[in-house]
Length: 359
Image 1 (cartoon, helix red, strand yellow):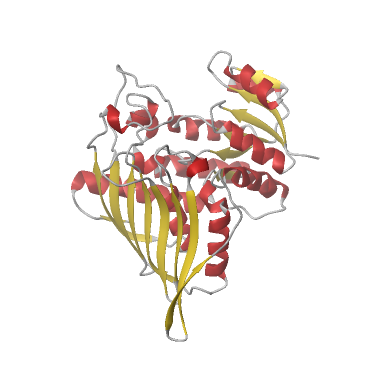
Image 2 (cartoon, rainbow, N blue to C red):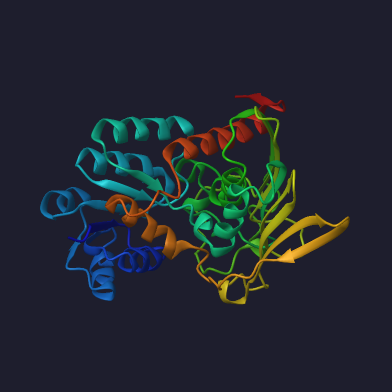
């Protein structure tokens, strides 16, 4: 019997969740969105039987095993908790929550109810990432000593004055929005426990409309813009490993770059996506490389994988369904997500205090 899914939020990410759920053989039976007409439109587009403007009504009336949460960051924790308490597994968009403290509350409910809690860290599901993880697990590259995580944009502010730039709604700016490469780097590293975190955020250009991204999200002249445009940081782990990071919506760089580079005891590696000026997935260039020494020579190898324009989003959603069914291991865990959120909290705190933060 297929997993029955309900959707909360009819935004753009629904297309990937829907494709992934159906790829895994699940059935989407209901969708809810507070915006008038949004749920009905999504239900028609994705052939979903029921549409609601009330989450409570959907949870009460629909026969649902699991919920997909696709809403602004502020509502991730309360909706996930509400759904788990209603007996539903939860697949939530990133970031997991506004803070580590919120995520800890979500984890308590997950444990108390026995319901799975997973997040859309879709870059782990990219073909390049899967191949690199295999080589790290089988010992080909040894253990990672150090890594560099980057998601840097030159013109990528997602609407000035909207919910993305309102810290109360988003939890922060570029750092919490583009946390994927920080997560992927720590995933490759085995998710070690951080010892110290040092970071600095910058709000340069955050209100400059010439640094807006290409997604057509409207500005709100009466809205709030109080988040960072860029963040740089350094993490020292209890294992002795280190990670440096650069994350930005608006920063003076040549082009958008999404990458994890690492140096291991037997070899190094890089997973990278370079965007053209329009920032559209179809124009991106993906690479996966490893760097080793063979017979006294430096050898660089390109790892060939199938193309994946959606950056693993579809496979990530499919993995959630497969995890519920017991046919696959989860690509991410709440415990790993908690470490990530503690790091993000610490970077913001370090930037405010001007001092390293011990964890």
